[in-house]
Each structure stands twice: as structure tokens, then as C-alpha cells.
Length: 288
Image (tube, rainbow, N blue to C red; front, top):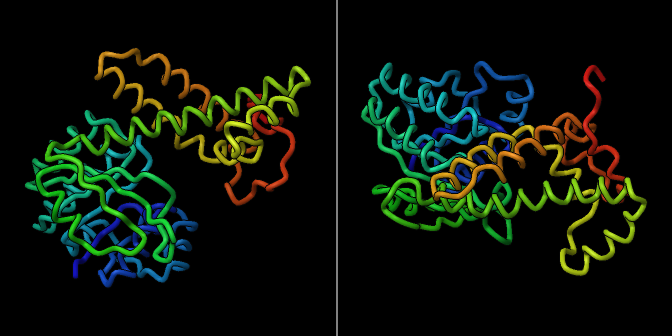
């Protein structure tokens, strides 16, 4: 079995920690420097707080970085610094929703501390050990097979290529469709309500997209703050493929505005299943 460190203990990080623990692996995480809600999340998961990033980095043979996209580079710097202070050389599983170019930056940062990287991309919801459908995690890089050999209930490893960046490229492509669709849905529903045709639009959309409804759009808005930077990473990925970055720069602006809405300040579990009006998706005036 392997000792796995997870940075940081957000919803996805704690979910991964639970799955690794269910597979018999030792799990190290810390809420040091984070909110009381983070400490509570760790306690509810039954995971002891290791106390510091150095304890996580120095005690694990694999360290997973799973943070909001804008924090990926800074987290890599923290992990590299922890490795230098402790003399440890864990394998870094870079599992953030970032562009291949960002993965290359992360690899350069931790490589200076003599750490290797596996590029990973999570496709699907936070994993659960007892889930009927495991969450897929794409893997790429010369040492990807080492991660793919780990038994983790609720996770299905999908090996892609030996080149770093392939897993993140796949994630950026699938996320562009899934999260781009959610942004389009929010705008369409707000526009339909403005013109008095919301019921007609919903009925017509659900013939082809049965999950397209107001609660689905509101649930996306609750995570909009995180999606802003993911849209920016998608724009960079598409620009790297000699496509215009303007489409997903605009999607980033959609999510930036959704993040200021009523639902942008709530949690996914707060969204009622029978929510009928998209009005809570409108950006709130400054100062409200």
C-alpha cells in the first residue's frame, strides 16, 4: 500500500482521500492555513489532520494537487518547498483543471526540487468508494503507470500517453463542452424569462437535453467562482491549438457574472429540485 498526501482538502480532495483510504492506503491531509469549514470537512471524513504541508509532503510517496485552477502554480511551489525542507521526493499527481502549458510550468517548478510529475485529469463528479459508476481519471506522463497500478475504489484510471499534458488536454476539451453548455443554458434561460417564453424554451430543450432545467443552471452557478479560471485555462488550451481564445474568454465572463448572482453565493445542495425561475442567476448590483 502507498501513503498518499492530498493538497488541498476541498470537496474533491477529501473525496479522493476517502477513496484512497478505502483502498487500504494511508492518507495525509492538512487544514493548516485554511478555513474552519475545511477542518470540519476533514473531521467528517475521518481523516486526521497531518498539521502542515511539510508533514504531507515529507510523509507521502505520492502527493496529489487538487485545487482551484488559479492556485495550481502556487500549490506546486508550496509542494516543492516542502520537499526541499524535508528532503522528500514524492511523485506529484497534478490533478487540476488546467491547460497543458500550466502542467509544463508545474513540472518545471517541482522538477527543480527533483520531483517527477504525473499529469492527471478528473472527469466526472467527486468519487465515492461505493459508487456504481467510478469516476474516470485520465493519466499521462512517463510514470503514469505507477499511479494506474494503485487500487482505489470509486476511481477508474485511464492511461493516455507518455507525454505530460495529454490528460489535461483531454480534460480541457471535455470541460469546454460540458461547462460551456451550462453557461449557454444559464444565458438562454435568463433571456427566455425576459421575453416571457421560459416554459416553451424548457419544453423544447428537454426533448434533446433532458437535464436542461433551471435547477441544473443554478447548480452550475454555485460553482461559478471556480469555473472562471477553468474557462481561462480552456481558452489558453484552444489558443495553443491555433484556435481563437475569445470564445472561452467570453465564457469566463459569463461565469464571473454568475458568481455574483444569488446562486453564486450558495452551495449545490441548496438548490431545490423544483426551482422554477432563473431570476437568481442574474448578477446582483454592486454593493448588494
